Structures are given as C-alpha cells and as structure tokens.
Length: 391
Image (cartoon, rainbow, N blue to C red; front, side):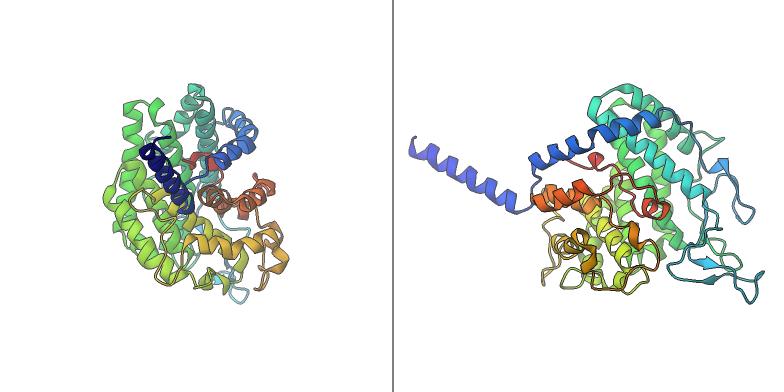
C-alpha cells in the first residue's frame, strides 16, 4: 500500500474511533432495536387503523371554566378536605385522586399512541395506508373546526376551589411530542394543505407556550417541569422549523437544566426529595435524554456536552442505570405509589445505548416492559415509540 494511501487509511480509522468515543450512533444496535420492536409496532398499527378519532370535544367536565375546545385536567395530587368537603381541595403529594377529571388527558394519550404507531409502521413499510388513517386523527385534533383543540392550555391541572388552570398543567402536552415527531416522519407523504394546517397549530401553541405567563412560569420551574417545557418546545420547534427556539432550548439545557438539576454524581436532588423519588428520577432523565436527541447537531452535540465539573447526560444515565438493573439497590425511599410498576423500557436506555454503544443498557432495555398499561406509567412515558426518534 502506498504511504499516502496508508496514511489516509490510518487517519480515517482514528477519526472513526474518535466519533465512536464521542457518542456517534451505533448502527448495529440501532438495527437491533428495529428488530426488537418491529412485530410490536405492526401489531399496534393494526389496532390504530381500527380507531376512530376522539378529541377534547368528546368529553366535558362541569368543573371546567373552558369551552368544548379547551383541554381540561385537574391536579393529580389534590383531594377534598375532610374538614370542609365542599371547600377548596388540599394537597397529598404523590397520591393520585382517582375522582379527578382525566378524560382529555386519556384522549390525548390515545391520540399519541395512534399517531406514534401509525408513523412507526409507515417508517418501517412506507405503506401510505398508515398515513391516510393518521390524517383522519390529525385533522380532527388540529384543523377540523368542529372537533379541534384550541392551541392553548388555560385550564390544565385546575384545582377545585383554588385555580381554574395552572402553568404546571403544561406538562400534560408532552403527550403531543410523538404526534409532532410522527408528522415529521410522515411528512413526505402528507399533502401541502394538511401539513400547513398542522404546523400552523403547533406554531400557535409554541407562541402561547413562550409568551403566556403560564408558559413563562413553567419554563422557569426548577424540577422536571422545567425540563419538560424545554423538551416539548424543542419537539414542536423542530416540526415548525423555529430555529430561534431550537437555539434557545439548546442553551437552556446547557446553562440552566444540566447545572441546576443534576448533581455532580449524576443524580437529580430535586426529584429524589419528592415522595416518588424513583419514578421522578426516571422521568426527568428520560426528558433530558430526549432534549439531547431532539436538539443535537454535528456542530452542537448535547450528547457529548458536559459542564466544567463533568455533569452530562452520560453521567446521568451511568448514575441511574444500576438502579434500573437492580431496583432493590435504590438508596432513597420507595415511591409512595406505583413503586412496583417501574422501571419499564425507558427511552434513555435505548437512545443512550445507541449513542454510546453500550450493550448492557440495550440488553436491559430489551427485557423490560415495552407496552405498559398502568395509566400513571403511561402518562409519565411520553416516548413510547423509540423508532421514531432513532436517526
């Protein structure tokens, strides 16, 4: 081999090793993830093809201050006061009140599952049948005047006798992330008019999220709520091509979320002090992982970014992974509810495994539950179709 050719070969080999160490996606593990999920995706898509749309207009609560097109939910941990049953509700942190109104949340989760399944199946097969049925649901939620949801969240996580809605309720629309991502995946098969209408809805909602006091308060939240604001704004901004917001979210992850929420060892102290420290830690790590997945570019790779003292998404996964593999080793108190239902196939495991070529993380993800049915788990697992997010 001529010296120049040998030099170039060695240089490329070194560059390849550097990219692998820097967190470039492992194509072999990526293909294995497709193989693991293929049958599940096609089965779920077959179910989705049989589903008729149901939006926020399908149910209404007399306790809602909004109209038929307004999303409404109630704070999960708020209960009637035994001392004054007809008075304002009181809080029981971590304890879900089963009598609260959840129909709109259930409808949105169902919508997310349908679009996630159909878009994943289209990604695998390129069969336009999946796109045609997805459009029936997308039009119902975003463009049909009779059934659409208003692009705002004024009445989410209300508290009886206290608030008709709260900024904290913005976390409910993390369920629209896989809808937005599904639209991106199906975009080549969508008509210009439908695509414009859907993107217009998300653009309007982004304006509301970033300008209304509820949105601004949620952005500033110190725990997983602030993380989830960035996560969903990033997903919706990518769909609409809002580069200004994408840049803002990258900087907020690097300068606010990572340094203020992650401890030096990779844990999340603001989550571990809660009454559900395990579930909230999983949830926040999933959200930070999705921020890295959505926002990373070759020029600004959040997967490899770390603070001056070494805090990074990799450190977060490395900290939590042993307690996913063996929950009995968890050093904090057990969650007051749903302790037995976690972990499931957390997206940080598969996406982290692909990025960092970690076969142990992948094997653990492969053997966990990929289709949880417990409502509390489902609502805190907004990414249920990881194939949509793999590069």
